[in-house]
View: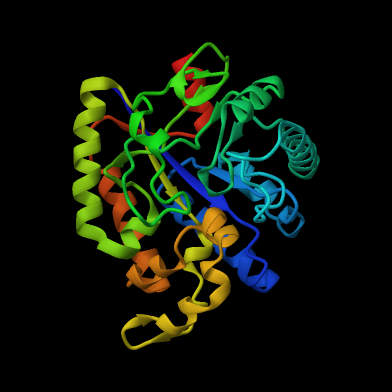
Amino acid sequence: MTIPILITWDVDPDLWLPLERRRWALQTAMQLCHEQQIRATFYVTAQASAIYRHDWATLQAQGHEVGCHGWTHGVEENYDNMSAAQQALYLHMATEYLETMSGVKLQAFRSPRVKTSGTTQRLLSELGYLSDSTVCSQRMDLISSNLVNTGWLTAPRLPYHPHPNNAYKKGNLPLWQIPVSAAGLPFISSTMQVVGLKPMQTMFSLLYEEAKRTGKPIVYLAHPVEFVPSLKKNKQGVNWRAQLKPQFFTPTYIRAHGLRLRMLLYRTAPSDLLGYTQQLFSYMASFPDVEFMTMTEYVRKLA
């Protein structure tokens, strides 16, 4: 039995970085996957995607997929509480813009800050998306912008068709919800920044055994920008004083971004994270019967 591994990258706007560093981050992630013969899915935020116009051809030539990661990724783009009208507007604009920029029809979606709703699932289905990979089933950590999402705790672990009124329950929408993998802690690059490489390899081993029993795909989430050396750090890691600014404790900020203090948990330097990611991908590839594929490749096999 083939064990599907879906490497996914969230390409956020990251407007605080110069353009050349954002492009370097995307190109680094692409090169890392290319070296490991991995076909990955890159979820790109539409409004800031023009800077990658010279990278689309290489990305697609390497077999990667372009997915949608929303319109602005701003504090207003929270799909768990946006009005239906605003969601429809943003999703239409993001889809049309990215399809024009990339020259391909979009079929994969992940919402900014992994926030979603039944309304979002219905609108994505109407737009013709085949998959959404926003739900993080059984994720119970505190390093998320969602804090503790009760919907995650009860959501199905296997891919499912979501309910039109509840993104975290099975229903009859044609869209597939492909959950990001988790075993309490999420199988994402932010976790590796906290715990290091070895625990991530152990988590993959557990997810691999589950996949052999159930057929569940292993979905890994990362951000290219995490490879960019940009944060000013003290000898103990992230500058803790910078995380205590009053604006980080407002209800609006916390609802959109979670607890900023979680940055103090991140102890892995960007250059080390790049090395860890290379080693983690090599570790995944060493297991029998694994196959790296894009989100849409997987969904088509699933269907």
